[in-house]
Length: 85
Image (cartoon, rainbow, N blue to C red; front, side, top):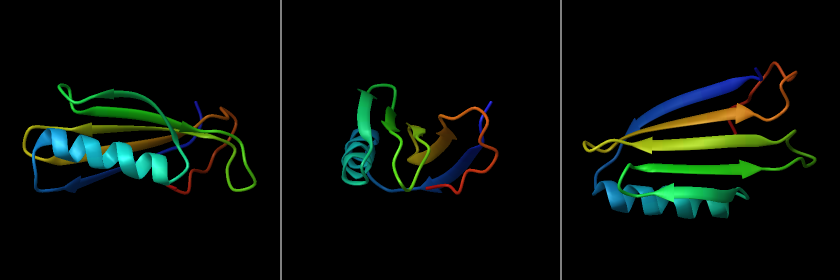
């Protein structure tokens, strides 16, 4: 398994609003959004290989209280460092 980074934050707004914001931010950050499920509060996206990255997969989960957990996982299984970007 490649390196991974997790972060958690608390945001105000409805679950659907936070999911929409996460989807928008992922796209603006250069990730290709693969799946969005507002009912479950999830967004998944990928970034391919570039000069800045070996490729990443991010998943966002929003609970009913507005707690957001973001996980960034390197696509390269041999990569041992994830800088959380």
